[in-house]
Image (cartoon, rainbow, N blue to C red; front, side, top):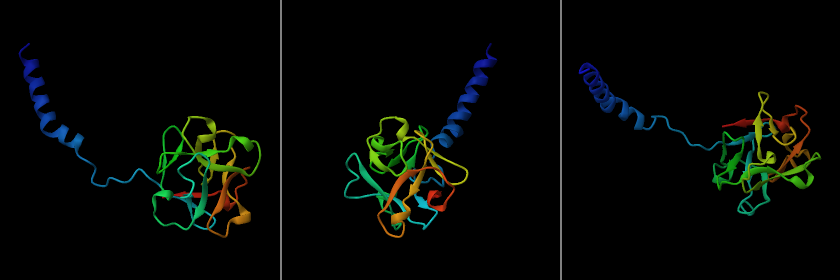
Length: 163
């Protein structure tokens, strides 16, 4: 019986002298939890409009990439994509059954219109209806391009690159 406590004491000593320091050490290549979502069409970034990002219904748009917090997004395990101010990417329920529904910022509530799934082809699908996150072709050439849901069609305005 004395042998078990001695082995246990040695194990605890080894873990205490090496294992804990490794456990608590930060990784040498620690990275930010934020990502940038770039449009496959023109390389502009998914952007939360500075004038409205603090309110429910805040505008989500494409804008020239600038590295600012309004272009920082965190995809989480619950399938939400959160802005730097912790609001969720959300499809407007008032028109969710139609192409062209507005994608906006909203307080996170765990509902399906706030769930998003990245596909192998680079598209991002809504957890509510399977439609794709889409940059509006009518305004695609300029900053402020509307982000909407549209039937998935494989076109470049529905492709996204996560960085």
